[in-house]
Amino acid sequence: MKAVILAAGMGRRLSSMGWEKPKCLLPVGGTTLLGHVLESLIARGVREAVIVVGYRRGVVEREASRFDISCTFVENADFSSTNTMYSLFLAREFLTGDFLYFNADVWFDAELLDLLIGVGQVGMDGVLVLDEKTCGDEEVKMILDDRGRVLQIGKALDPAECAGEFIGIGRFNHSICSALIVSLGRFCFDRAEHGGAGLGHDTQGGRSLFFEAAVDDLLGDFRVMTVPLGELRAVEIDTAEDYALAKGMIG
Image (tube, rainbow, N blue to C red; front, side, top):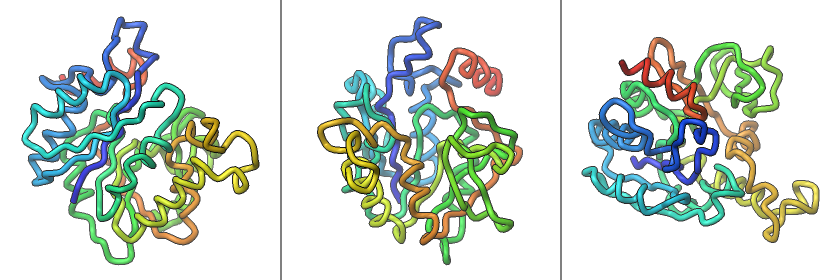
């Protein structure tokens, strides 16, 4: 199993605290956000990571190279105008088998990976970590059936119908990989399917979307389940307030 880590972004909303480096290099618990992901993987025997880089890619690559894990770097040169949809599409040649997915701006209890690595694979195409809570408009939310299967995922869903937030960490099995690559490509480049102008190669269009839209496109044909965060902790760090919350959790 490999890990795919999206770490191309700038973290503009952290400017209020004077942070100018990539968000994934925020110091937490004696390491960085990215370092925490890599250390957690190494401790569980994962030896390969594909990291999508962009903003100040050199410092991110140097940080990753400090750890005893084989890293392949994929560049998103359009990091400032695209989003996770395009970053994951750029890593498509590596989506060939079971992989763990990470947004690099999330701090989490490392034991969370034990749930994802150990989860059964029979009849299951993917697993997304669910924070069961009442969500607002900003969170990526999920609507589930009574067995925890994801029926819809996205920001625009009615919070009252949602079970909680997808925290940006999950697992995708080999059975969904080919279809996921096709779906990512359609959103990034297919004008006809997504309403004409604005989604073609000569504009950013669908490349500025979150990758969850491509996953949502597949949910009718593939069985994507959830694993609850439960008593474990995780926080996505977008703002100075989020960062303070994460540091408070770590102690």
